[in-house]
Amino acid sequence: MPRTAPAARQAAARRAPKPGEAKASRGDVAYQRLFEAIESGELKPGARLREVELSDWLGASRTPIREALGRLESEGLISRDPSRGMIVAELDQGMVAELYAMREVLEGTAAALAARHASETEIDAIREIAQKDRGLADAHRIARVNRLFHESLFRSAHNRFLLRAVNSLRQSMVLLGRTTLATPGRPDKARAEHEAIVEALARRDSPGAEEAARSHIRAAYRARLAQLLES
Image (cartoon, rainbow, N blue to C red):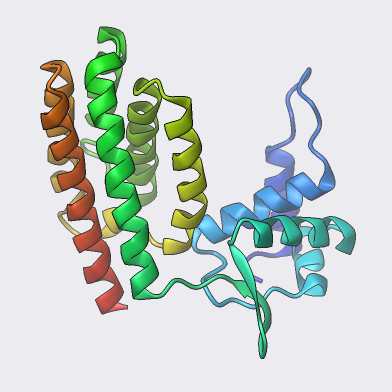
């Protein structure tokens, strides 16, 4: 496993609930830790998942591990391979294309709706977030800012059904692995694309916002393809 059991237990301790918050079950803690490991690339697509090894890695009994694996399997993040057993799910190039096609539709719809329904305060907040990664060098920190930008855009669309669709897609997006924002030059281009979306929102230009968002996702897809070809 990528991290030692003591380190994994320390990470779990840092995520302990605050006073007054409901305490997460052992299965929830195991699920969250495994989800984060898949999302960060610690557990890569195709990695074998053995209950005994995961139990030692996370410092948990096999029952919560089994519960977490069942939940991840139901979400499509892990699968059963005839020869390898349970593994982190793998995406082929066709599946990646399908994911980005759906993301383009959802992002474009979100931007179009936000141009009509977002408050001025929400638009100002999105504009501020679009500048937060300026000067950052760490790809993971840039990716967190990028995630916040897109989450804010979706919330500003004020459509609960759109949010449900986005959350479902996001589960599969974690299988893509390393962020494309680690590619040299991509953060600056992405920031410019974000700024184009924000300016369309500020003008209340719904078609313009949709096209800017779709163009942004098409550019992200091209960066992803280049990354896949290099790997």
